[in-house]
Length: 167
Image (cartoon, rainbow, N blue to C red; front, top):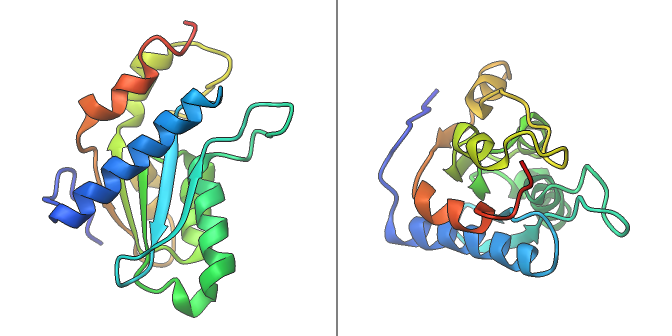
């Protein structure tokens, strides 16, 4: 199982990771938590993009960007189409979102902001009661391989979190 911390990305992959951060920015502008994610198929085409929508009244706590993007991609591609897919996300996926990546058949996770760095930005804000559980540990317990790459470009990913959380 390949779980490189800082593996070089191609130019296209870096562009996709920056797009995930941009989606998080758009979520913040819409009054939601600043997280964004997208899923690509094996050819690198964007299949689904989602921002976080876990804030009531229209959202719910399960509507993290990664889970929503993974579910939308699976609905679009089906199990066979998910082979070779990649989840690009502005922040390290939580246990729930890593599980969604696993169950939908995503083969690679690329993330910008580490959970540890995110916690330093959110502090004890009750709107982000995070798990101290790296996605690599969740992936390691599964029965199939998922490549994990990150953290990468953390300073860029941190910008929308600065001044957002009350801690």
